[in-house]
Image (tube, rainbow, N blue to C red; front, side):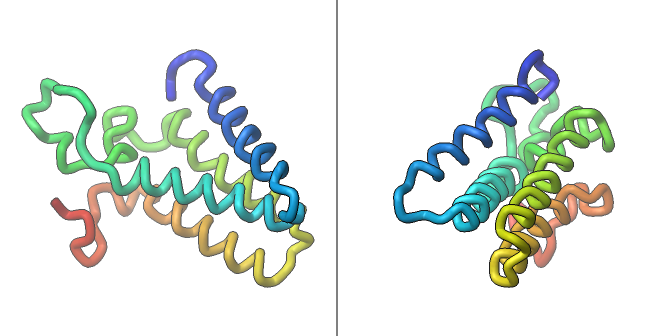
Length: 137
């Protein structure tokens, strides 16, 4: 996330997902915003908080194989610019989704649960913690 233009590419990717979902003829605008939020948060959760290890050989003698990608990011240093960016984006998307769904109760609850699902694992207190032993190995 530190490479040049990565943040812009990330935002454009979310925008592209939203435009693709808007092209579905029978989907209303509130449903499309909720789907955009849910798909983004699901992908973020799966890629950052469940996948462990590295896709290439590292000189750390296997220490990274027990850490998720979020825990490995920026060598485990908390509150870097990349981590702040990846924490702010779901919040901004949640606010936009809530606005465009006109704070409908069903959409609001679904989007709130989705937001909490991606924000809680990002807390510094949960660095390296495996709740109920899930994803321990």
